[in-house]
Length: 296
Image (cartoon, rainbow, N blue to C red; front, side):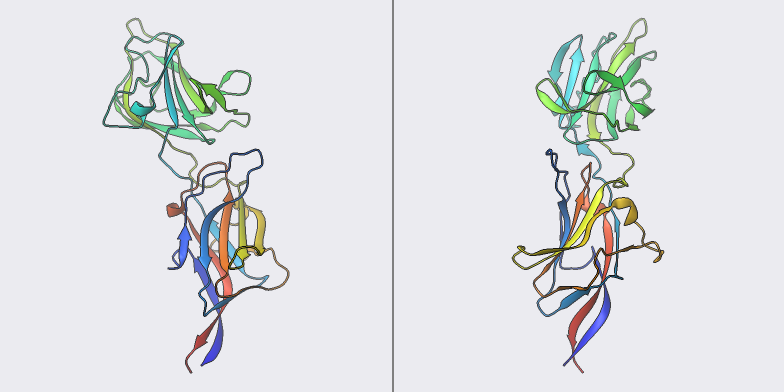
């Protein structure tokens, strides 16, 4: 038997990798949330050196159920969450049967988001217009960068993505007892004989789908009992770790001397993101030197 040291790539395809979707910490002082982890096999040793690199492609978790949906008919609000999250019911009251200016529909979610998907089977009468609004802490205000292929829910029955630029001053507020980040679609004009829109289902649909450039990434080595931790990457912006092909642009580990992960130690990849990250749509490449026993 002899000892071999070789360049090794840890990726999401390693059979010993475990993973989980990363939902943001929404406390006042958010922490990093685990995305991937690997326990080094007992017969091996991994050595991480200053020249080694890390690359990550991370995507937001798409098509999540709305946390709450609320219909507003002339100021009378009703919880519509069950209808919005169940296509079989086919009874979302996106606008009342006889809509009027000021009627609205609210989509609420625990986390900041950039868009949502609506599937409806009955369109509103042509001539409707609406404002797509968020709560800025003082008042409801129109979102910017709006893309609304539903044309105020008057387009033909179908499934549509409504997207917008996420407001920097978006503030969670209470609607019908639910304190969430809300988007409301408020009727601003109706035709002479209006009829409303009823739908099948709604989902939170982030856009763009990639983790945002200013979200943070951390990679660390932990002892077997996880009491000792050594960062390989302390707190890098996502925008600097997303390169996979050009070695000159790949991110080098934040270490000045080698860090050794013995058998039983953990390699952990964590993120601090503004939206949930779906691990099934992520991949990464972390280089190191692997020491193993070989038969002569």
